[in-house]
Image (cartoon, rainbow, N blue to C red; front, side, top):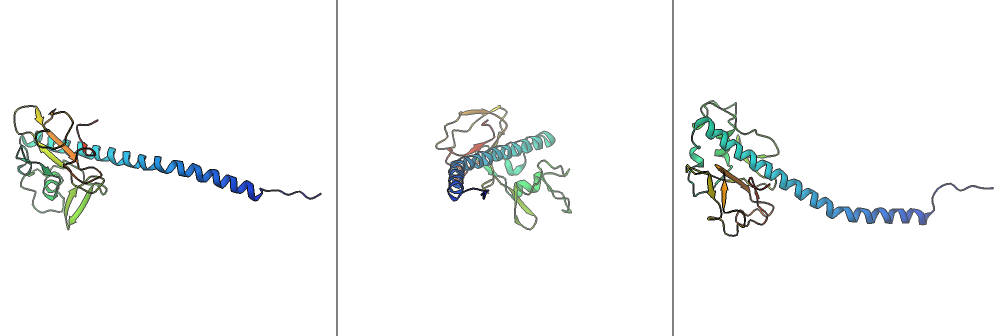
Length: 183
């Protein structure tokens, strides 16, 4: 009597078909997980920038000159990084950070070198963060007054506000922007 061990072709095809269906069901879920991961990373980055600005203000008792202008938004560009994360290789300290205090850590994933020795702090989609500092003695800032389709709270209690342009890369459309004050 001959014994056949193993699976038949039909059994193998059924198993492969079931695995294919399960994989097809997982792909949309994986995309949603990746989107939420980038959003969470962007929110963390916005809070890091906000904290760095507030630490600078606490240390020097003023906002850095490049951040001033309460009605004008600013970006985490090379000037921001040169002051907030001075490189140890620089011979002279930045004019606005004479103590060479590192207010923001330069990590490979969050910064992009735009030219030799010049960095920008960017969100997961590759855009610099945008921020606004409060130069008035008031604790609240009106954000809705300078954004077109912003539907969040009109007044936010903060000294500095930071946000990412989101997946679409547009700072003006707030549907997908990620902000430091949204939890």
